[in-house]
Image (cartoon, rainbow, N blue to C red; front, side, top):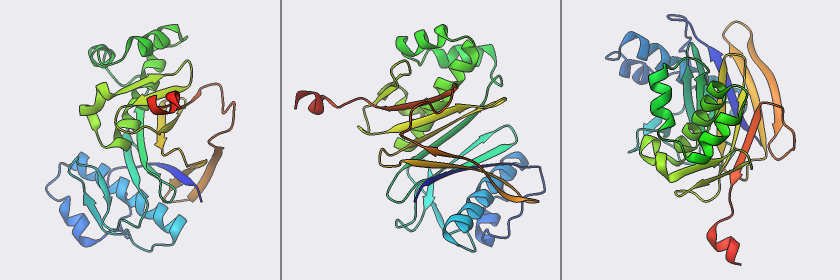
Length: 246
């Protein structure tokens, strides 16, 4: 088996919700129009991916954790993570027994003030790596996307910002919450995505979905391979203190 990252472009009023329950759709009636469109588009994509990978004709029941993270009500079903960037929605469906965290960011969507605020939350090592890159704005977005994906996997969100350190120059990361995590981050022309996964996951399949043409497989990444691409980062957890002393 493998983990799967799927993305699709959504347009207002065009999402096909035939795999979603009436209760889930009714739940969105009190949302703003923008939030409702994104909410349904992401869950419709998740439903299509569950059908494509596991054969489910409709989306299994969902619940929300105490941290606000959606998950399947049936604990035997795989972990997943949702993300949004512009008019793009994404779903990361983890391999069986693994955990998932997904983030997507448009490269130049944030204001200078927002970038300065994000920079205040980064370590000196992260900032030094950003300043050494040819495009610091792109590099800063890449670091931010990596961070968000890991914090979504751990379930901490913004509250865990200082529990995580990235060391992109050496391909390492350290999370206080979970000792073993890996993250893969790639730069596309307009968007950056990052998939955080449990260390046991060794394959990541990338998909694009459209309601008109269905599924298109983009890439099949062997997670532990070397030289994934010039703009692809893979970070893995640093050895724990206990490991270092053995």
